[in-house]
Length: 116
Image 1 (cartoon, rainbow, N blue to C red):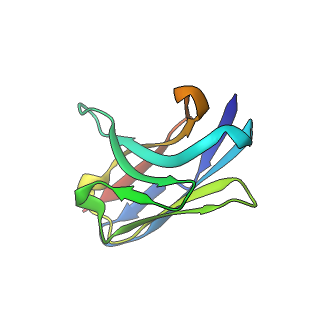
Image 2: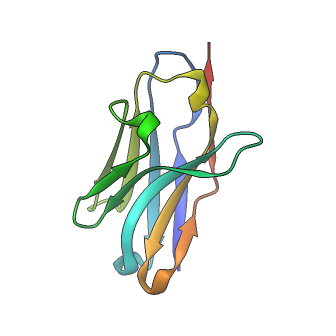
């Protein structure tokens, strides 16, 4: 089992920045990738950014150049630096871990609201 605790959401004006954190505990050795998803009201949950253990990253197109995912392996923590935020970035952001044996774990979610 992997437990995830997220922090860092909030309310920000368009053009502003936020940094989300996701601290993992438990079966850390089983983690293969850490990432962030988001879900806006009435929409499906979508992948925002993903970082594999080897450092390879994936981003959804509409955040490329604005969001950066990083990991501090010593702290078992993933970060999502979000710059140039837009109202359409408003959503609940969920940390996700992909682990061995195709297991997937989710954080509790943190609200990000971008005002225009």
